Image (cartoon, rainbow, N blue to C red; front, side, top):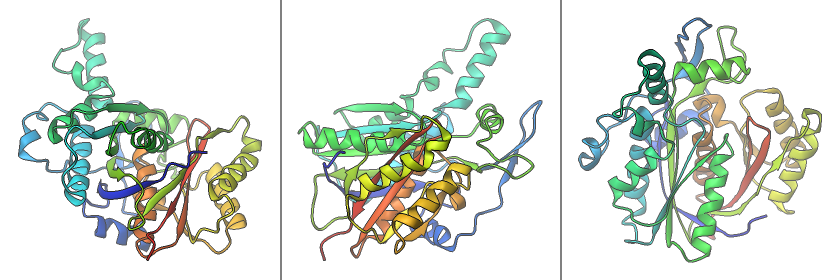
Length: 342
């Protein structure tokens, strides 16, 4: 268990619910999701998704992004908003950790379509196919010249990014860490998730996939800020029938005897998510439950940071929150947050 507290100094998000956090928060609290779009998948069933309009980005980066995919626009916009709230970042002492689950799928598909069709892919497309392209754009936009890392996993990549930020700050390698997670939608990845029964199709089963980005500016612990006080290193569900035991163990280790006032769940209504909800209600009967993915959709790593953002909002006046995270590849992790000392 990693007890290396982090203060949340600034936040930013770009979602299908909007970009202004107050608006997004109100919609999550209302619990009423928007009407999903039907994304056509050639040769297969359509997939229900929440698309996000490309956000505006600072002029200093707009020219650089003219050939970029949606994921880079989303990441830059969320990062710019988080930094605007946090204030100037220490020159040379700010790290960037970017998390994604799928990366720039649209550019990857287009590149390999050319490879299959013509025998060669365009060098104009290739740079945006790599996973760390969005991190490169964010770093260039903000003038960051410290550590820049990209992590790839299922939804638990968001927690891996927070854990990495804690390592960088506690070791003295950085004074601040900007953590960004982003996802974009493309029919080929959406169809894959549908076939794996992880996405809603015409029958309405599965989660509604979403695109978006969330950014957090993190610093050393401060009693006047909401803190991420504990980050779980993660456990693996070896068998579905053992899911309850593993999730219960992670919840106990995260809480460490504390009684949270709030639980921000990762459940989208899936079978494992139902187990998560049942165990949270059993272990923390007094905790208020929030289900942001059921309103904003599932954007994997970005949704994990959105869970933390919801906890940050609720803890402004004190309290404690637990944020469990279930990954689609069988990983279970989470974080425990505490409000400021009023």
